[in-house]
Image 1 (tube, rainbow, N blue to C red):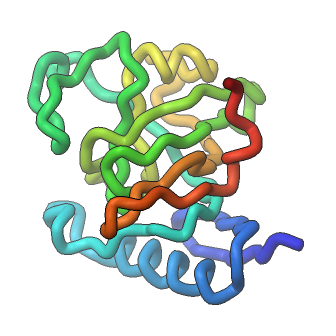
Image 2 (image 1 turned 180 degrees about the horizontal axis):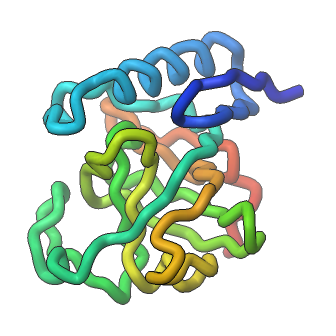
Length: 166
């Protein structure tokens, strides 16, 4: 049975993993949300829990096209790249727009968003795929990790691991 925790501005976190993992993830998420917006990503504890998060998504502005992301690649507006302040780089996740029900798979390749209350920035193509258009600007989404890279080089299955299509 999933554990549900209220996270204030961030929303709800549902975890299919142990209560201990979700407590650690909750603490990391709350800590990240309390930091000033300009805080560097290196100062935020990574969320290795694999738990689902509900919050606000936005998408990269056109001015970020071609800029180097945190993982060293260039931001491609037509790719599945996304930014998270707490998920480790290389994490794959399923992002579902709660209003439209549409989902897309993303890879965390960058840090951000650096706007209070937002949990993920999406490439423009991914935003369109889940029904988030420029006129909307923001959407409430569930971010469910599929695979989370671990510091020891291993990989952890996330809450959406069973949802992945081969």
